[in-house]
Length: 119
Image (cartoon, rainbow, N blue to C red):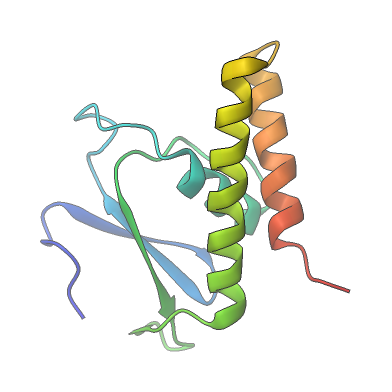
């Protein structure tokens, strides 16, 4: 499976069963920050990552590193984090966070909750 062109697309593994395909020069080119992608990747890794910019494509990953369909549980993670980030950004228009650090903390906490195993 080929996503984009090899000159523009980087592949990053933030979860052992998923691959994020993203523009390797997105930040340098001034593409919009992808808050949902960043929050998802950060939650999967368990720490705040560097900013991600531009459109992302998320695929599954086999144990031997090949691209495959995304598993249902990871698809649910993606949808939950995207919904949460959109809701949070909308709320911030009415109630902005006190600082950039508070904003990052809020998004990370929400994303971590969204990808936590259900009991």
